[in-house]
Image (spheres, rainbow, N blue to C red):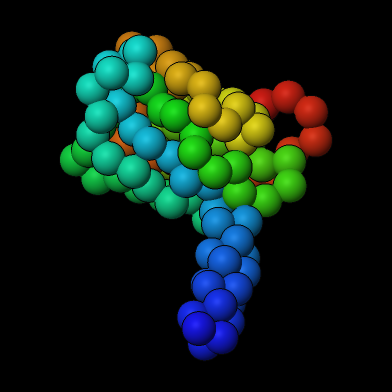
Length: 117
């Protein structure tokens, strides 16, 4: 019984540590978060290509670190284009439309104070 309680306490702490450093994002094929295509962890201050898995909207389920901004890219390497949109990682649970005229193929998370840029 005591071992189980210790395990649960350690598991809870470790789980909190790992999710605090990455945004967890559900991706959807459509613009309204209806057609789920997958989930992607985006570590703070990194690029996370999604490969062939294109998406047009996201729902953030964990926000990652402090003041992170999530940006979606049409290119699968986080190279900026005119179709890229961003949202504060604090928008947990909200459906956010990301790419305007084409499917997105990468996500990034970066620190910023204030609005997306």
